[in-house]
Length: 412
Ligand code: SOE
Image (cartoon, rainbow, N blue to C red; front, top):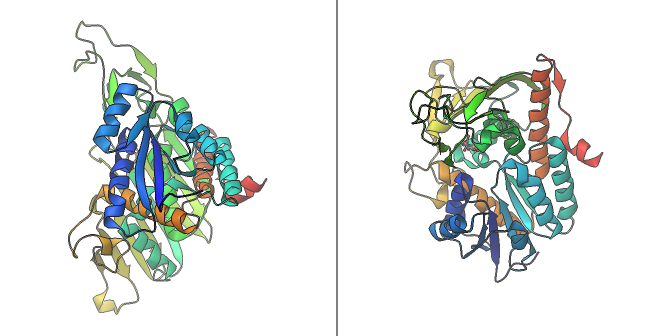
């Protein structure tokens, strides 16, 4: 795949919440990081001509199109960035790889294991022709998370025994919150499990370097029927003429539809190397807005991360003299910390959006230097296999369900 004057010309499909987050990162990445290629925001794609024209203007794209096939067919696009709901990831990513475009695809990689397997296989084939692909698990790029991984890799935690991970939100606690696409299995694949559970599955496998080998799960859909949406944007949505009692202004109940995904998923797991783990993903954790927490306990220490305090890492070093032991709070803003030398002086904090900028940094560098970026589509498939095992376990009364290694299933 060619770059023009060390330019990578990006075409992005989708312009809602993730499209806006990715645009922010594409706009910023070359202004903050010194990279071997410049990302150019060439083309944005969405089905509604008026809305995508507005998005192009607002988010800073050179041009727009209403057909993703047109975007992929163009010779002047090097990278396809997929920010659509999960039901179109496979089709778009497969077509883009077949056309020789580098692909960045939002998480979860797909809606089903068979789609994810096809995508991983296509990505492995495309690698041979120098075509790169990556799945967008942005939280890997929070500096404190990257540092957590370094501590584990450097042996500072000793033998890993426990992983404890939760990702909690509350944006659908109200039973009158409408039936947006994230609550429909045909569009999203699964609910809290795939949307936010996927993040903690990927993050813990990444940080520990271990694979989840089996699970026992329970899932629940607390609210089974919801009003149909009149409109939605990001995680906000409206119902036509709804009043506080759930009736429309004229006293009639608005039309409703069935929720076809889980509202919450809880599971225990084994990771290879004898690690015991617990995971909880819920959109019904009242008061918890976007609370991703991970703690890892090892024979020599513990690390803990909380997304709501994302510039910090808690570290307990059990090798210190007994009298000095205790949790220390590391402010991960020093130039020595991952990604941080490009930003502000120590103590000047960064936020959610920076994880996406770091993701684009790593992607652009990998593509421009001819290296495969991570997480790969095979890594995305590994997460998909866990999501699938959790769903099957819950359907079978929490029965223990093994998770195959992704690479073996791609080769098969
Ligand atoms: C909605 O739950 C959401 O936007 C997810 O889709 C993102 O992946 C997560 O980062 C924040 O919450």
